[in-house]
Image (cartoon, rainbow, N blue to C red; front, side, top):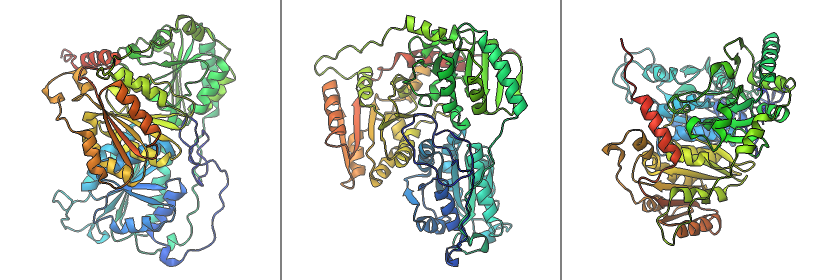
Length: 604
């Protein structure tokens, strides 16, 4: 699961580890093929298709447009590649995001400008979450570059760079392929950069080029041999020495996992360190799922005032804390209200170590640092023992009266019982963030949500992509009604793909998370008949089952059916709850974020 980024052959099929996604290959030697192709197959389109298969992409999410149609023909012709047609570009991008979370890399194909600017929001989200994603755009005919022609799908100017300029801020590399001579180099550089940087890249391919044979594509592409990133050895040793001295003199140190551990491929190294030092182990909310929750010293989610029970007390009372890959933004810090002190913290970034108010060490890889530190720390279980002393097990929600309207805490009590190593949870932006955060993940259970970017509607496309990649898991998606209305169409793509996801549509009549930050009439939405909507999309094609539930008895019956007789179907369960039924954590978090948002301007 957690190896150096070495030579690439084929990405391993995901296993049941809850840590980081599969590495991008781990072979040290590359055997190049010497068998030439049929020259008619030596085209740009087929080379791109073979490259995608080679790095582990077997599904590409697309929306056709006249500039990418020939390219799509060549992607379809690749035996190992499946083209998944989506209802819109935004969802295609979200699906590639979800796919990358499971498989380690994702890809989408759209058309020029109208498609590119539609998918841009999803690419920005993947950038914020450090996901390697290949965004491919069918571009103008190569003969039109440098002319004064005005093309359709543009804003009416003879300048084709608008789309490129937009992508420059949300991708780590941009390739505009409008001639065959350097196409091989540009495509390979873009894809390898995405893998090395764990960020999205943009590839624009002129619409008249994919079908043309060229000598540079005449052989099977040699698998990437990506130079592994290396730590500066002197800096690494100095960082470990300083950190060990800092932590070994602490009385009750703790460890907290952050979301950048995924991109740093340091999840296993983090657990290795936790095993050896005995510290209490917590996760930031956006790192849930990166550390196994069955670990003997796991104490829950550290999220300031809305942490899981007793976790914040242990973390914030510690005299030293090691944060691995954190992101401290206004959401993760609950409106900048964390009770942490810089002088007590060691902050690990993917390639940098910052120790308290003291030294900083650059060119030190997080994985190398954690592995080295594990050999230098003294065992110290004080913080975990303190947690164990004060811990009181969670209570259960009040039992529902017969036919009593369903409460959200009762819903999630039943979702908890559904989880196993064969499931994965997708949590939409909203109150599901807080309710899903309290779920206890069994060994192997996947968990994903988009906290840094927080784009409502992300979960529909991400569920499609994740389920397409993780065929060994049944996805359970928790989606609010407001978010669902943004991206609902691609439930139809889930049906076309034969997925058996369970979607819990939580119908509370509006944007509840925004109500708790700042209420107003704009947070109330038009109610849909959601089950009827999905039935209309189903239209008798594919396997689909829907149910609307109002009380616990109906919920239990629906879950029994979804996990029993309809286990091979896409199951859509609309849960009707009161508009003010929210988690206590959202109430607290919303008031603090509101206070941060409404701070008056500083005096000039």
